[in-house]
Length: 261
Length: 249
Image 1 (tube, chains in turn yellow, purple):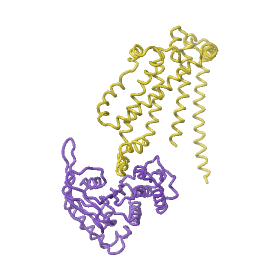
Image 2 (cartoon, helix red, strand yellow; image 1 turned 180 degrees about the horizontal axis):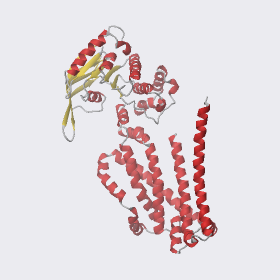
Image 3 (spheres, rainbow over the protein chains, first blue to last red; image 1 turned 90 degrees about the horizontal axis):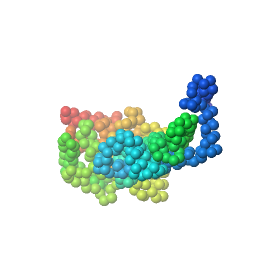
Image 4 (spheres, rainbow over the protein chains, first blue to last red; image 1 turned 90 degrees about the vertical axis):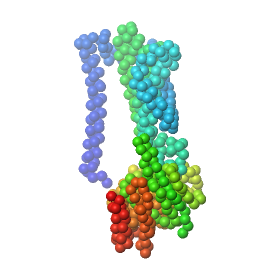
């Protein structure tokens, strides 16, 4: 049985949560309304900063005439492919480095340097080597996401509780069993955390790649818009990116929630 | 009683970048079936090293450890080391799975142990739902699952508060006695060692040698370590061992 006070306490928590959520929604709504009003009163120059209605119209136009869904799908496809490959490679390499101390000692400084190198600088090289196509966009995203995920996952593996490893050893477990029974399962959360970081890393990489080379995708829309000085298109592209980010964030968030159970 | 393990002229040296550390210096003793051996000594003296060697976790520098054929050892640490992502039941099956002996008979044995020692209602819970004392009991059952002949306990109760510690040490002792196992326990707590064991090995400071071996006889049934603490024998040995350790300084 819950006491009255406890019910009140729970109610208050619920009310606070709802209040926070409503305020967040309000901020977004007010932002768009103010933006529209400023545009209508011609206080801001819509040629430069567009307006919500213009953005909306641009989206409708894109859907009607300019393969809106192709652009979205192209970007999504590139993100998903690089996300999957990046995580798999990251996990695999991190496991390898955990398995072989010699390898990890040899490659640690290289990883650190590669990680701090601004990968955009490699963009022109990638275009020349791989060509101006989807492949180089995915490669760009992989360069950005894989190295950091190798470092993160390997660090998590390295800090596995020694005592848990000891217990498996005393039971006669070999190195493979130590990995599958302790090291991997005890680091599920850090691994998912690294997936989460990877979503944004892949996003950055894909958009960067699209800005450099692509013929379709949201990055392409933004680039094209800026070249023909169509700010409506540029801002529409940015807003589409925000929406996509929200969707991807919640996707990972729910995966995390399920795996935590 | 049958001799199941003998340590002969055992030396152990650790190498670090800066120096060599002699941990064990000529250790000799024999372990008989049904023995309850306590190893005490000043901190950092190599008690745990000795246990690690018996548990096949460390190599020997010199000397030999002669074991009875097919002698199985089970190991328990200060930290219960239960895997938080597995249920109590799954935790207990860990050793069986690792040794690929997860057959019906062994599983039944684990279930029986869980029933007998009051954990039946918790088999589908996760370790975080359990109290420290219960977790330590689960850790013991996990160790017992592979049916070891000798149990090695490394400061198993140090992480528990005093009250829990006394009651868990009683539980654990009873479980080990009921299952007819041999026990080696390392502890820095003299009273814990005396109240639980029938043989105490006192180690000296590093490099450790065996300073004394005491055979403790409570004359009567000594199944209850809490009761043992109030006996005359207990006080007697406490003083002797205390002196041994203090002369070290």
